[in-house]
Amino acid sequence: MSKAFSKNFTLNTTFYHLKHSVDLSVQKCVNSIDENSDRSEEILDTLSVLNSLKSKIEDLEKEFKKPKLNVVVNTDEEESNEEVS
Image (tube, rainbow, N blue to C red; front, side):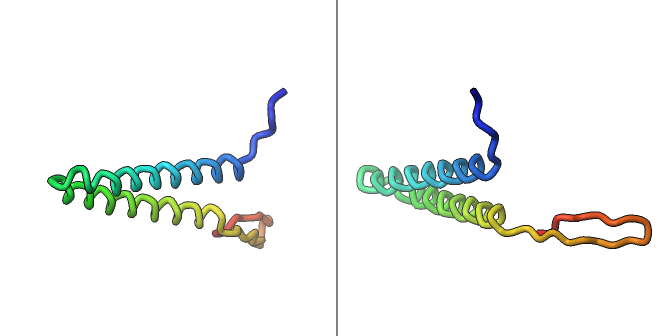
Protein backbone atom coordinates (compact mmCIF):
# COMPACT_ATOMS: atom_id res chain seq x y z
CA MET A 1 0.00 0.00 0.00
CA SER A 2 1.51 3.35 -1.01
CA LYS A 3 1.29 6.56 0.98
CA ALA A 4 -0.38 9.66 -0.39
CA PHE A 5 1.90 12.27 -1.93
CA SER A 6 2.45 15.44 0.09
CA LYS A 7 4.11 18.44 -1.54
CA ASN A 8 4.58 20.10 1.84
CA PHE A 9 6.31 17.07 3.37
CA THR A 10 8.50 16.52 0.32
CA LEU A 11 9.73 20.11 0.13
CA ASN A 12 10.24 20.47 3.88
CA THR A 13 12.24 17.25 3.95
CA THR A 14 14.32 18.42 0.99
CA PHE A 15 15.05 21.79 2.64
CA TYR A 16 16.04 20.00 5.85
CA HIS A 17 18.47 17.69 4.05
CA LEU A 18 19.96 20.51 1.98
CA LYS A 19 20.65 22.62 5.07
CA HIS A 20 22.00 19.61 6.96
CA SER A 21 24.40 18.81 4.12
CA VAL A 22 25.66 22.39 4.01
CA ASP A 23 26.15 22.35 7.80
CA LEU A 24 28.18 19.14 7.56
CA SER A 25 30.36 20.67 4.85
CA VAL A 26 30.89 23.81 6.93
CA GLN A 27 31.93 21.71 9.92
CA LYS A 28 34.38 19.69 7.81
CA CYS A 29 35.88 22.90 6.44
CA VAL A 30 36.26 24.39 9.90
CA ASN A 31 37.90 21.20 11.15
CA SER A 32 40.34 21.20 8.24
CA ILE A 33 41.64 24.72 8.89
CA ASP A 34 44.16 23.50 11.47
CA GLU A 35 45.27 20.57 9.34
CA ASN A 36 45.71 22.59 6.13
CA SER A 37 47.00 25.99 7.11
CA ASP A 38 48.60 26.37 3.69
CA ARG A 39 45.14 26.15 2.09
CA SER A 40 43.36 28.48 4.52
CA GLU A 41 42.44 30.98 1.80
CA GLU A 42 40.71 28.26 -0.23
CA ILE A 43 38.94 26.98 2.90
CA LEU A 44 37.69 30.46 3.79
CA ASP A 45 36.47 30.95 0.23
CA THR A 46 34.64 27.62 0.45
CA LEU A 47 33.06 28.65 3.76
CA SER A 48 31.88 31.87 2.15
CA VAL A 49 30.25 29.99 -0.72
CA LEU A 50 28.62 27.51 1.68
CA ASN A 51 27.26 30.37 3.77
CA SER A 52 25.81 31.99 0.67
CA LEU A 53 24.30 28.67 -0.40
CA LYS A 54 22.66 28.17 2.98
CA SER A 55 21.19 31.69 2.83
CA LYS A 56 19.71 30.98 -0.60
CA ILE A 57 18.22 27.71 0.62
CA GLU A 58 16.67 29.52 3.59
CA ASP A 59 15.29 32.23 1.27
CA LEU A 60 13.70 29.54 -0.92
CA GLU A 61 12.25 27.88 2.15
CA LYS A 62 10.73 31.18 3.33
CA GLU A 63 9.29 31.81 -0.13
CA PHE A 64 7.74 28.35 -0.16
CA LYS A 65 6.23 28.82 3.30
CA LYS A 66 4.89 32.29 2.52
CA PRO A 67 1.07 32.12 2.54
CA LYS A 68 -0.59 32.47 -0.82
CA LEU A 69 -3.62 34.68 -1.23
CA ASN A 70 -6.58 33.67 -3.34
CA VAL A 71 -7.87 36.71 -5.16
CA VAL A 72 -11.05 36.68 -7.19
CA VAL A 73 -10.64 38.63 -10.40
CA ASN A 74 -13.90 39.78 -11.93
CA THR A 75 -14.11 40.36 -15.65
CA ASP A 76 -17.08 41.21 -17.80
CA GLU A 77 -17.14 37.72 -19.31
CA GLU A 78 -16.20 35.35 -16.51
CA GLU A 79 -14.84 35.02 -12.98
CA SER A 80 -11.58 33.27 -12.21
CA ASN A 81 -9.45 32.53 -9.16
CA GLU A 82 -5.81 33.47 -9.43
CA GLU A 83 -3.10 32.65 -6.94
CA VAL A 84 -1.05 35.65 -5.88
CA SER A 85 2.20 35.55 -3.96
